[in-house]
Amino acid sequence: MQHTRSPFRPIPDICKEVQEETRKHMNQLTKPTGSLGCLEELVIRLAGITGEKIPDVSRKAVVVMCGDHGVAREGVSAYPQEVTGLMIHNFVRGGAAVNVLARQANAEVHVVDVGSLLAEVPEGVINRKVRLGTDNFAERPAMSEEEATEAIRAGIEIVGQLRQKGVQLLAVGEMGIGNTTAGTAIAAALTGQPAAALTGTGTGIRQEGLQRKIRVIEQALEKHRLSAERPLDVLSKVGGLEIAGMVGCFIGAAQERIPAVMDGLISTAAALIAVKLDPKVLPYLFASHLSVEPGHRVLLDALGLEPLLHARMRLGEASGAALSFPIFDAAVAIAREMATFADLGLPDPE
Image (tube, rainbow, N blue to C red):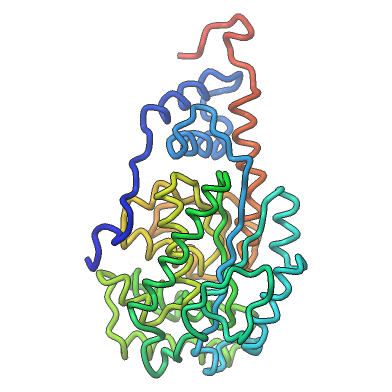
């Protein structure tokens, strides 16, 4: 293993005692034990993360990491690379799907440029640009390990700043034309599954483009000789700067005891890298939804996590993660507001 622990600040353990207190509380509510399914599991996990018997996750934020990919020149996307920059402008104007969904959940959206091709970063975007896009990993490594680490550090620092502002629940997503190719290459390298079984249509490429995308990934895996035991090498060889930034967000969230909600394929690929770098990240992660990208289920299985939603989404941007926020609110409300058997003068169930 390249890193058995994160090279950054240590990650605290989950509060198992508080978690058990919340589990007992949930069993005392006026319902059959376990009958609220994932809502019960959700609030119990949140209690362990926050150290609060009735956790408070009312202050929510969405981080959208943005970067461009040299591999886009291989024709692996249905959209031109300029769309990355156009969407960055759209995010700060509040016109993207994630903006709409975040407003519904009363969450703030923070847009971070860690590696787009934009010469000038728009006002309202957090500028942590490491470089202007990655190299084409079909030809050479996407970036150096030092550049990947710099982007990881940016993600960690941004989450630390959000914690200082009182953020209690974090969604992590991305924008970058070509990044489903990078995310799928990471998935193949880390899980050992064949690229053909993991690769989806991304932005909506046709069959010819899909076959080209599979070939690009297969050739890159062979060229770079990637190993699941070397996650930082995988990230630097076939990843993206926005993916590295998300790795940092997941590590930073765990360091700050903030529950972190993954989005789709690319966000989950970043989460798996974070867990490979430091396994103590895993208890802080939540799977929001199951993407239609075939590699997403494989990544979730590798993490041992079940998605809260099945909505046939494949947009990215943290849209699925933002959509899941009301489920977190519902779980906490159940724990806080529902009557117990004792309230009704009845004995607790055995």
